[in-house]
Image 1 (cartoon, rainbow, N blue to C red):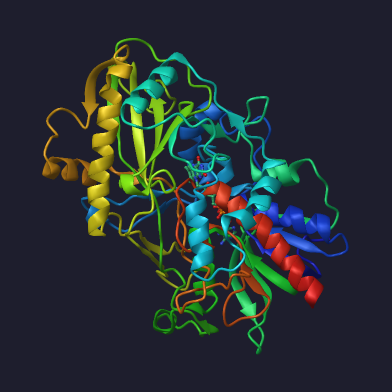
Image 2 (image 1 turned 135 degrees about the horizontal axis):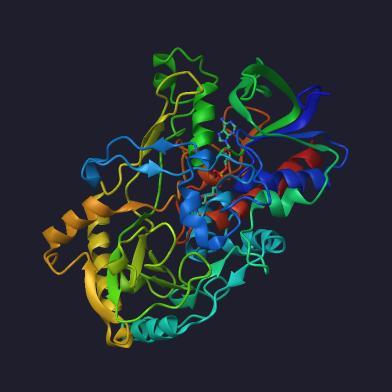
Length: 508
Ligand SMILES: Cc1cc2nc3c(=O)[nH]c(=O)nc-3n(C[C@H](O)[C@H](O)[C@H](O)COP(=O)(O)OP(=O)(O)OC[C@H]3O[C@@H](n4cnc5c(N)ncnc54)[C@H](O)[C@@H]3O)c2cc1C
């Protein structure tokens, strides 16, 4: 029987970080329901050359065969550059090619969601969902090495304390051993492998190599079917859902799909001749991302090996010390110049990098349809560094990284500053350096935001406003990013999303 035949109770669109967890949790708790998981990408074989080896993550993230290949429109705030916006196309989604860093995110940020009307989304209420994910995704805490020991001393000189565990301490502030989604055997963890790989859920059908193109609605604006294309045969299919369609296509794919389906800003849809199902001005708005800036130093001696991909330490601090210790907006990751994929000349390989990730930025971007053709990428305009305060915070971060990298605590290592370089001193020079070099952290969020205001796309139950039988469950529902990388929060959203679906089922 074709995997598309018959009616499914639930159709999940996208087998990424969120979609695989949602599919597993529903399939396990609704054994008599038929569930379909659709995904454009394919499975990663166990012998794949790079994906499973954490030290090769930069190579994996550049692998075009695993990628959608999105690019931003030219960014005014980044010297007119077009930025490559990484998004994986595979069973497991971005968990297949991300840097594996595991950061739940500061409690303050989640509490803000709740304060702004998202009942049930305060950090204490979300903790059980993080823990549910952590039961199945193994977290490896990095070990100290001689460089990291000296880094801790350098941070202490800046007033940044040692924090043994940024995920379980009352706050993130400090320099800590980094935590990675890496198995005890040293392999990348992915949501597909860990939640769906070894388990056979008889009621779950997984169809890979299928692009979903549109959601179809009945007269009551109930989502009843999905129009999709089998990418191997180019055959068009229509698949019917008896209960709900759950969109988990990520912060670019989900707004793109809703817009193609007639859910979005009315004038944009009408201009492209798309019949309006629900006029929601927030679809594709509120695009948020973190940006990283770079400081690089030559080292007097070889750096310790880096078995996790990035170095085994992270620094959380704030551009506004008055918010410490509870609110951080800077997360510095580090790498050695020997990291695979950096492709440095031999004289630069004995070096260390400090990458402050600028978080909670003020700039907000958009995703709009380029055309009603589902095969065409949307227009993505993150508007990086357009909010005036963002560049000031960037300057603070480069200065901070520069001071840490040259601190006397690291005198056994520091030889010379390469980036931004001694010629970059004034604020204007710093600003020019940042606009020339800052790059995406790949933490896209917010484009189908959850909330109770007019720009909200989904309710706190993740239901798409103005429709029935349709939810979004992925990073796009994040109303405001939290201080941290996005994978942990996204996986938590999937675990909570499964509970929300089950709760509606019980009350139906
Ligand atoms: C290079 C890189 C490094 C990163 N590093 C980290 C990190 O170290 N730590 C961290 O916390 N976060 C990191 N992130 C971010 C994090 O991985 C993402 O925020 C998270 O995975 C998003 O999950 P998601 O479920 O929302 O989307 P995704 O994981 O992107 O899943 C969406 C899925 O939907 C599929 N899809 C979309 N549209 C269609 C369509 N029309 N038809 C069929 N299928 C479709 C996609 O192929 C994909 O599999 C990184 C991201 C990247 C790209």
